[in-house]
Image (tube, rainbow, N blue to C red; front, side, top):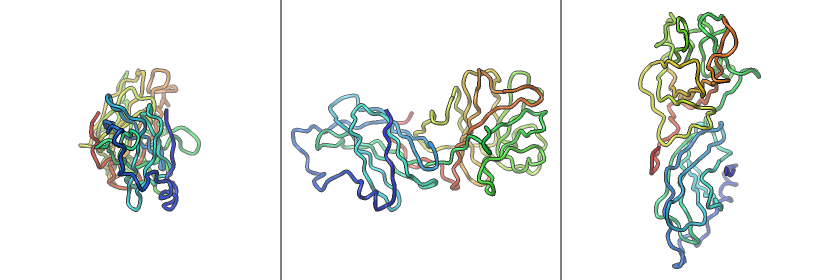
Amino acid sequence: MFKYKSLLAAATLVALIMVGCNENTTDPTDAVPNAPTGLMATSNSSTQISLKWTAPTAGTFKSYALQVTATGLDTTFTISDATATAFVVSGLTNGTTYKFSLKSVNGTAKSATAATISWSPSTRFTEINGNSIRLYEYVSTRGSGLQLYNPTTKSPEVMNIAGGSSWDFAIDNNGIADSLDTGSPGALSFTIAPRRVTMMGKIYSNVTSLDDIYESADLTVSAEGLYTLPNVATGGYCMVLKTADGNFAKVLIKSVGGKILQGTAPDRYCEVEISYQTAKNVPHAEVKPTVGH
């Protein structure tokens, strides 16, 4: 079960600290519990981060203490439900990196170590001007390329060949019967010059929502590249990108009704959703957790 807490103003945050002056006083009858492991994070929006973890597999514990720190911030939340393995923190600031440290609690005793991860919230885009974000097939005139974030409109923009020098991401099914290529414009067959450099990273398959993708370490990218995706797919695909300007992002290509391409030729399209970090060179995670995934 998710629980929600909000980080509001700095003064309010201090008031929310749920640790007393006698924090270091431990009742000898309260055994020190084992620590939780595998703390992971995902950005739900520009102000919200979801966490999940693995509960201690042995020993007694009755609750959790979640410490959240950043520049000018140090607050602790009590998660009183010992069965909880997920928590949502709201009221955050896009581009700010927060460190989360989770300990299990047994009465007055806390685990000797904490599961830790640092993460930054990112802006989520699911539509443009009230419509879903659609990238169209190669022969369509409606645009196969995507600028992840237009600083003027403060939203993504779908572009055709004429705007190719601003593309960060594109799809290309030219001459491909049952699949499509997708990825950085420089690695696709479009004749565009100059091209923006988009670095490609990990790809996730069988994804239904960006909310399903939790990370346990920094987002990483390697080189410009492409992925060939089957048109028939029970779930969608999500790719990690880094733009020429240094902004990290995730792009989800959705599967609807078991297919990537929707509609009818020559204007078939795929729907995408975007998680975009407006702060440059912030790979979301900067502190490795105690256990990876």
